[in-house]
Image 1: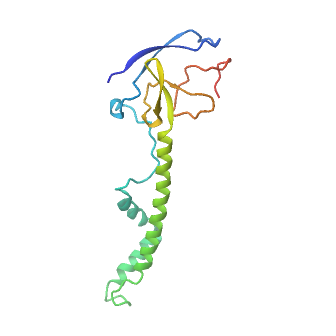
Image 2: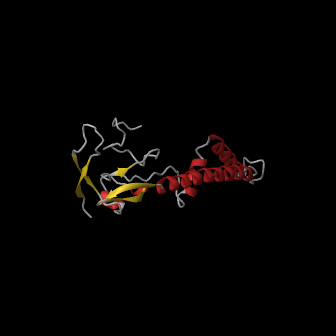
Length: 173
């Protein structure tokens, strides 16, 4: 789908821009992210891992900790029979495994909370101009060029350029 031009009249609020026609280019709200490959998506992702990268990346992360590397070295040395006092049995391994599993579980819970928060934030809705009416669009689906209406005390869904305000002095807080 290609962009289409639209003329929008600035609010007649007594400001210097009142009654001026503003020409903008925006995209239909139902377009998908592949249409605008030049720009990044408005979706946020603060989680470190995905479902299939959690295990390998987290194991690597666990062994960036000095204590875990130290105990892994002890386990390796315990498995070498000529220098081991445990007859080649890695007695420290169960303790290290418990510590790593607890750390991985904690990391999983933290990342899951981030994922839930991201999903909630991306699922919030904004009012986007489509043809002559405003439609509700998820924040993750906002694209460069969309004209967004923000009401009083609403959170801003993205970095936006203010086109008009309903305040008599033309200010927006």
